[in-house]
Length: 255
Image (cartoon, rainbow, N blue to C red; front, side, top):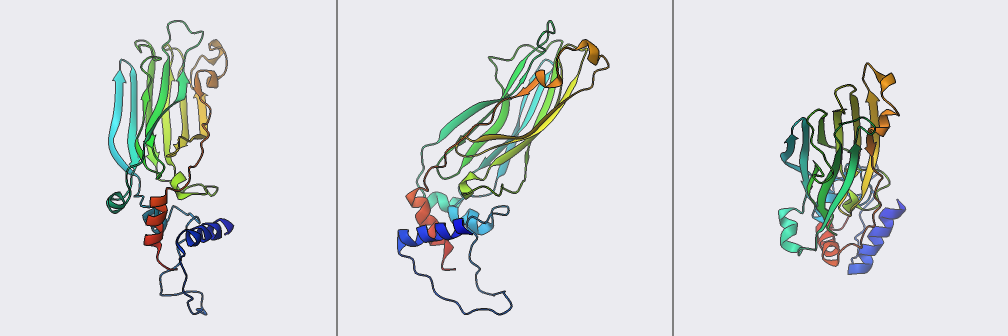
């Protein structure tokens, strides 16, 4: 509640906006327009999204990588400004992000193939996210002739986290599920979930690896040694752009 009050005060200070008092309603309900829950996000309300000029997340054609026995299929997701907001808000510099996600390697297993999987996207201060998809890093991925790797990355519709302080932090969430066989003598199944945001944030929500080989005793180390996730990436939320703050004010109306 405090963060809602703080933002409303900030908007008032910014514009000199004066609220009109409304008569109390005894049953707690009103037919008049309800006050928007600016940061009381439960799925990012339509009022909050429209107020900031952000549309919902949309999917483009999936990105597919296939080379030998390697197949990576990834949803291609974006969240951009609405058509109405684009007319009011001038384009802001976009920042490209590419971070490693998962390293798959047979380690001491001779002749096993290795792959580096990474996520790539663009973001800006408005909270827009463009071209978010997962791919292999070509430089650090070897030929999959004897080894095999099959993994899919699917975008999820999830409620934004409670600790999010700004609707522009609303992340895009991917779930992944795959199998990795380093040399045809041991297969690892793995799955997990991670999220990214417009400001370069990357966070793993879970990552699990399980060996389904009949000869586990011949495979050195732990399953996680063969399918490793990378570390989370911290981020800083920039100040709300003045033109977006003005746009927000114009579209909220008096609660």
